[in-house]
Length: 564
Image 1 (cartoon, helix red, strand yellow):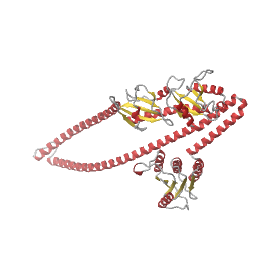
Image 2 (cartoon, rainbow, N blue to C red):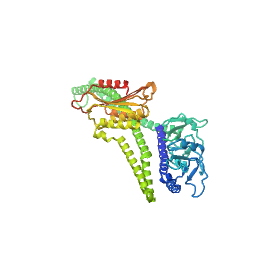
Image 3 (spheres, rainbow, N blue to C red):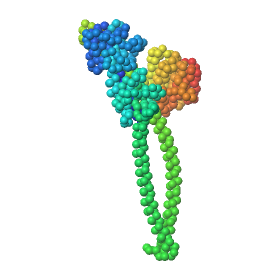
Image 4 (cartoon, rainbow, N blue to C red):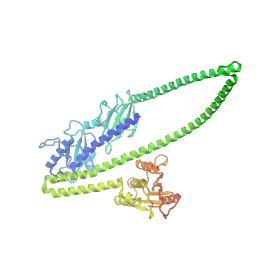
């Protein structure tokens, strides 16, 4: 529980810092798309940059092709800019073509080490701007670090790409053994031992698209004390329950003993011929005989009940074990599905942020320029229309990937053909889709699951497998429908004992297919990969040519052996 809490705090802080860096990237890209900067109108751009920097509580600077700063929002208008970035930063700007986050450096005009988001500029005069830098205030990053709940001695730090501490929470020590984190994998909890000091438990999480990371640390003793308190409460509850059970057992035993003594006294008096109060001897003997017979029957019934109870207990234990196993499998599958869903959402958000949002911002700037300069309104509005057209196309692409409309309108085969054509057109990979003339209509969830399997398999084959030829085969048989994706790439990564190492995407697809009663298998080697998904049919099509499941498996095996 405590390990999960440390990991959760680190992951949450990393997400918050990623958003903070993303705000700086949006500001830099917005300014990089300014028409005034592209025309070389530094006066108009300076006005726009100062307003944007004031609104975001940061500062902005631009640099030319020689590494000199040509504008800095922290320098008053008309004053000379006597600042030059570090040579290593200039080298990174020339080598990279995408926004990046720097390590900490002592920048000119700053009173403390800072980090910056560097955004390349395209289309502007090289002697005015080749890149825009947006300052990231480390004090602002410190406010986003969590305050751990493990008492005194717990703290959080954020490290840059070189392992330098960029910010720390309240209570963090002046010195921290950063080198002790070298063997600690992200998302895991590790132990840091220090000579002459208390041992620490640490969890770290990487900030996406940067070399930065967040580390949450708590003393081992504080974590152990929290666990001991929980165990003490559980132990106290168990002891209380045991004492109550013992008390009830003693009271019941006393009652039964008193009843047994009365019965023995009555039986002894009857055996000795002494009169028994309350009726004749015959009547008393009959009463005792019936009582003994009833007691014998009760004993036999109780023995039978105990035997049945024992059998039911064993059955319940077996069922409980199976339920626990199924629950663990379900929790594991659910966790992978949620992780895959979070990854998809993060990827969509990043794509929208890096493409569509920038086009909309560029369109907004063009419209603002058209209002400010009526003489250039036609060109500015034309640029805005082009940006909006590109944004519309990107939104349609995202919408198709989320839920292809043709999957509902035309079915699985048509949707797969169109999607494969799009992937082949963008990647240059030869993709062939083989399907029967008439395919059975599956449920919406089944068609969506098969589409996602093919989508993930094509993405892996193109991006990771570097395949040049891919074949998608749809086979209808008596038991259901099989979809196989065969490529000629260099195969997937092999884990221990030669088992294919699956990522979040394939694991979530396997869980989705199994949920529908189907099966997903992966065979990979140096000559290519075969991903096969089978689902049972919910309805048969009349006069549909079919084969058996064994025939379908044979065809898939033959395809995997043949060149794509």
